[in-house]
Image (cartoon, rainbow, N blue to C red; front, side, top):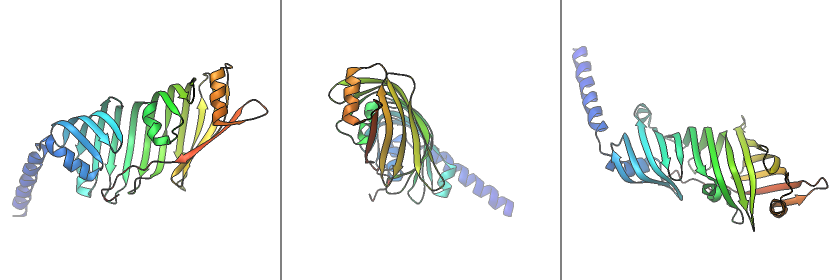
Length: 258
């Protein structure tokens, strides 16, 4: 008798799962956004569990075309996990997002290429204009239920970096790596890769703000670059410029109540 009940239950679960898999992608904007607000999808096709949106945005940031797959097993543990492929513009690459029952958001295995200008909204420095391409690698990141970054491990390479204040200044390629220690402190190193800008510094994220401390100099004697550095920091007797850039982070809205 138990075997019969087990077989019947298995058939019912299989049928429900088969029906769920066929749910149209038109349900995705509301259902996915309810778990990962303020995710907004338009031009959707496919199914709820595997589909595509021609245009995707998260709060203020546009991600362009996105294809997704919803992992079903985590749903049994009240978790929503999405495997995303970004096909731009402006973002290209892939990542995994997981929204937990307590409201935290996990970002794993992200490999994304994006224009540096896209980061303008994050660093919150209106006087700076950024150009170039950023290759972002996030092994692990955690955003709490209020939208604040609390853990980050990975790196970012800024290729053909350009900064404009009153003039356009080429910087070359720059590399940032960061880790989170056992106490939850996020810190990183900042260095150049042999371009016009010589750079060596540290980055820290704490108390919902970021801080960059570095020594920089113009290798080529570029007048525009020297002028840009003079706007950003204090000249040292060695000729280097000591940079200290800081500001508030911008929270992600990950909870419907925030």
